[in-house]
Length: 433
Image (cartoon, rainbow, N blue to C red):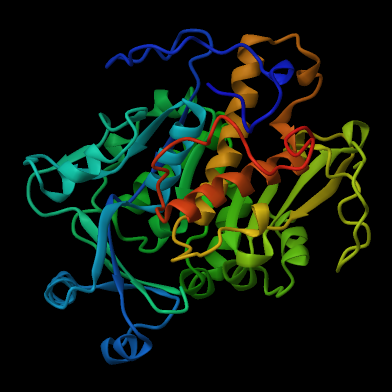
């Protein structure tokens, strides 16, 4: 487990020596931290199209729609024949996030989902496995006898907007029997996405409900990525009730935040989210990201940065506080932070695919690092209270920003490499808060 972010050596806690990765992971050993995620295993197919193409195909721009497998295959063949496909990659919001988490943290993650039982060299399943970090454990996937993995066709218009057409395949067939209770009970957190809850008739929905109930019964944090504005707006009441019952950490973009909270202002949307969850990440594209969370007033730390007022007066006053679950606070207060894009963002952004998942990977790393540190050094002053995060909100926002920047610069929703060992052009103390 690496330390979250880039800081001076005096801040590092003990880490294990790197070496070969064993096929059999010892979950019982000290410091054996892992996170669990459930996903619709997908292959991402990216294509460059114009607005007229979307209108002709009846695809609402910026939204995610389900296509039947026949139409999906027809679209795919048309795109290939006209040289519009720019790449084919392993995908899925949770799969991308776990991959990025394992790359930046050197930490173990476990993915539940459905994959072909018979895999041949060069097919979708083979490419998915080959392009997933080796620290993401795929040995608990459910093998399917017939049918194919799902695919998500990402139509990118000249303005960089992404529109998705989802071909389901077998991705919704995950049986509850493949959800391992012992792995969830020993995990740092459980990561899910709103896509898993789209259709309550599917085995995948039942599997997701089983996982979050196990997590709730064992005080394991549940992290939910909202995924798409359309789905949240369509099932808003359902998601509000679900979040109140099971979810601790929310992740979304500004459009999804507005659909859930009915608040167009991201800061007020973050405040609203704290009425149904414990922590929220809202990404706002070129305007950076917002984090909101709870802190116990006794442990709240005032910022050393300039105070800012937007829709909330001096909203960042306690941004140096570490996040906590509301139930663990004696006197809970809401704390917020905002950060603009790292170094102003990459010079040219081909598309924003995966930036939000990358930011969420950084948050997951910080939460799991707190579990790891507590396991390794239980008497540390870092654990005088039951904190959710290892770092302050201000620090986490910088880390989220940095990982998102790397994804955007690489033009890939999955990190092709870890963060550089040396950071150039950083103001003094960027990672020190």
